[in-house]
Amino acid sequence: MRTSTSPLLRWLGRLALFAGVVLLVSALLLPMLRIHALDAALPEAAAKFQGFVTHPDRPNAIVLGSSVVRHHVVPAVFDSLTGLTWYNGGLSASFPPEAFLVAEEFIAGVEPGRVQALVVDVLPSNAPAWENAGTLRAAFPVTFGEMARRVRYARTFDEARIAVHTWVTHVLDFARHQEAVDAAVPPAELAARGFAPLTEADNPGPWILAERARLQAAPDSVLGVIRATAADFRFRAQSETPTSGWTCDRRTDEAIARMRTLIDAGEAKGMRVIFHFQKLWDTNGCVYFRAQEAFGPCHVTESMGWPGEADSLSAADCFDPAHLGPEGAAKWSRYAAARVAEALQQTCE
Image 1 (spheres, one colour):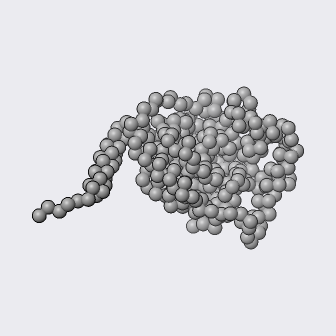
Image 2: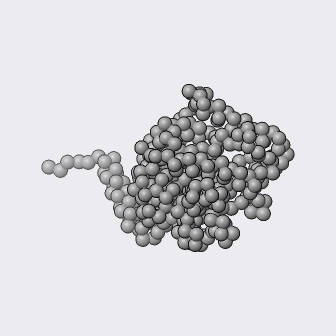
Image 3: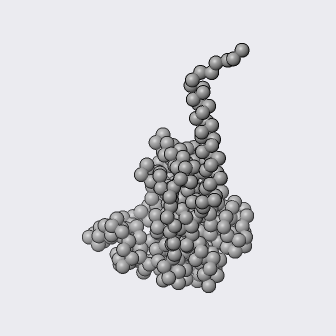
């Protein structure tokens, strides 16, 4: 006797079959098309990594992060204070979670024993936005596991929806027409081992130029805020309740989980992974103090307390309120490199 199946169940069965076929096609085509390969999805990162591997100075240490790494980390200064040979792997506008994923890609692609130290400059997670969800740069790392992680740590239902949408885009990327991008590190930047001093000649973009104009219009006010922020961090670092008054949300948990993954992956390749906190922005202070508890001084350093009372910092050292010019970068690098050197001397438990 035939049993009848409801139209809804038949529709759901067809939908599941269609989804299964799409997933199978995606799994077969994406590796062949290499759309999610780093040199296709994030060519600037691939170019930086290639520069590291082929650089004649044979660097054995690297700093990864966003523009505040690219324009601030002076490898020669780090060399002199740590005894290693450093490379600046900073990328413009590379915030977590992308920054953590880029670090994972670097660790996975490097030969065991090739790198002694990897410093990841930690910034607050970039809030997901619908306008970016369909881009290849946003979608390429969002596997099912990454999507599940983002849903787990989402602060709002909308953030969870964006995570699912970005994963669907990732699956359907086999249908994307992507022009090849031949990215290369500019010769002067490569010669400086990835360091790109920030000047107006670099055409940094309208937002940064607007911030520069704000600095130039009221330099004493901007420098006062920078020094007050550093002083606030130094005070909190001595307090028994350093995060008092802050809202430490689920992004803190997410960052700690990703950091632990990177430490383990680095150890498997014979490298020390160190997290450096440069900016006291948004949840960064929360993440720093949690990371100190979780990983200790062997893996965690900061320059959020810079400049100190005895440190010189003038408007001429700054390009805008968030970025340093060449002179400021040299001053900051001396402070940050000393902190990294201290971490490298620690014995990890």
